[in-house]
Amino acid sequence: MLPVIALVGRPNVGKSTLFNRLTRSRDALVADQPGLTRDRQYGVGKLGDRPYLVVDTGGISGDRDGIDGLMEQQVQAAIGEADHLIFLVDARDGLTAGDEIIVERLRRIGKPVTLAVNKIDGLDQDTVASEFHALGLGDPHPVAAAHGRGVRSLINGVLRTLPEVAEHAADDELLPGQRAGVQIAVVGRPNVGKSTLINRLLGEERVVAFDRPGTTRDSIFIPFEHDGRPYTLIDTAGVRRRARIDEAIEKFSVIKTLQAIEQANVVLLVLDAHQGIAEQDATLAGHVLDSGRALVVVINKWDGLDPDQRERIKAEMQRRLPFLGFADWRFVSALHGSGVGHLIEAVDAAYRAATRDLPTPELTRVLEAAVSEHQPPLVRGRRIKLRYAHQGGKNPPVIVVHGNQVDKVPAAYRRYLVNRFREAFDLHGTPLRIEFKAGKNPYEGKRNKLTARQVSKRRRLMKHVKRR
Ligand SMILES: Nc1nc2c(ncn2[C@@H]2O[C@H](COP(=O)(O)OP(=O)(O)OP(=O)(O)O)[C@@H](O)[C@H]2O)c(=O)[nH]1
Ligand SMILES: [Mg+2]
Image (spheres, rainbow, N blue to C red):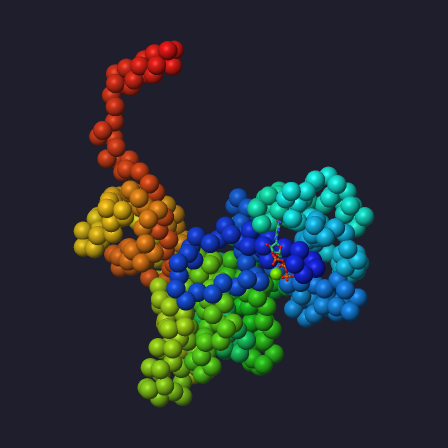
C-alpha cells in the first residue's frame, strides 16, 4: 500500500512549494494535456522505485484564535490517514509561537513527525537548525524547497522510517484467492453508483472469496472469475453489504482512491450521466491519467434518458475530459445491468494494450509513415528530423523517438504522433508516452562506425595533440 506523507505547517512556510517538488517526478505523462487541471493537494511522487503519496494540508494557523484550523475536517482527515507527517517551519521567521502550538497538537496525534526547516537559502544552516531543536523533534532537515535543496535527503529520511512495500504483493504473500489476475480499481466520487456497479458485476460472475478486508483503512479486494480467468476488484466505495445498497453512506477518501489506483492494473472510472461532470470527477480523472494506468470510463445511470439527452451528455463529458479520449467509454446502467456484461472485455483490451510488445522495426516504420505524411515543422530554417523509434517501457507504453532538434517538437506534433502510434498498434485504453532523444539511429550509426584501425589512429593523434 502506498505510504502517505502529509505536509503540515503554518501558512506561507512553503508547503505547496515542497509539495510540487515532491510530486514532480510524475509530470512527464501529463505534460501538454489540454483541459487537464492538476490536483494541487494530493499527488504521487517517486524516489528511485519507491512511490509515495503526498498530501498538502494547506496552512494551519498556529495563532491561538486559529487553532481550530488544525482541527479543520479536511486537514484532520488527511493527518488521520497519513503514515508520516512532515512538519515544515520557516527559517526566515525563526521559531514562532505558532510552531510551538502546532507541535503540541501533533504530539497529541501521536504520528511520526519529521521536522524540516525551509528557506535556508542564503542563511547559515547550523544557526538555523539549532534554533528549531527547541521543538523537541530532533535534528531538523534543512531544505530550500524553492530550489530543491535538501528535498531528496528529506524524503529519503522519511521513507527509511516506513516499511518497504512492493508495488504489487508477491503471490506467496497473498491469502488464498486474494488479488489474483488483473486488478481492477473501481473509482469515482460518491453516489455515481460504484457499489451498484460492483454488485452488478459480481452478480454475474463467480466470486471466489467474499469481502476480505486488508488493513483497516485499506480498500477491499474481491477476487472473482470471468470466463475461467481470475480478476480482483478493488472496491473503494466503502459499502460492503451486498444485500443492502445504500449509496448515501458511501465513504469517499481521495487517499484511499489514489492507493487503489496505484495497486490496480486497470481503473474503472465511474461517472454519473444524470449529474454530469463535477469538479471532483475532473480531478479524479487527472489522477488516473497521472498514474499511467489503463482505463475504462464508465458512464453510469444511462437509463431513463432520451436520445437527445444522451447525445448532449456524451458531448459535454467528452468536452470536459478531452484528455481521457484514449480510453474506451462505456455507457451502462448498473441498476438495470445494461452494458455491464461487456465491461470486463473492455478491461481486458485496455490491459492488453498497456502491456503490448512494440517491435522496433514496426515502430520505426510507423514513425516514417507518419513523418512522410505530415512533416514536423522547420525550426530556424532547419527541419526537425525524426528517424527511429523503439519501445522504452510498458504499462503504460513509452515510445522513444530519436532525431534532431527533438526539444523543439511542438505539443501538437507530439499528439499527432501519439495518435498515429495508437492507431497502428491498437493502443486504446492506455495512456501512451513519447520521449524524444537527440541523436542518430544507433543502428544507422553502426554503418558509419570507425574501424579499429581508424580508432587507434585517432587515439595516437589525440595523444600527440595533448603532449604538445
Ligand atoms: N527563499 C525561499 N522562499 C521560498 C522557499 N520555498 C518557498 N518559498 C516562498 O515562500 C512563499 C510561500 O510558499 P508556499 O509554498 O505557497 O507556502 P505554503 O506553506 O503552501 O502556504 P499556505 O498554503 O498559504 O499555507 C512563496 O513566496 C514561496 O516562493 C525557499 O526554499 N526559499
Ligand atoms: Mg499552500
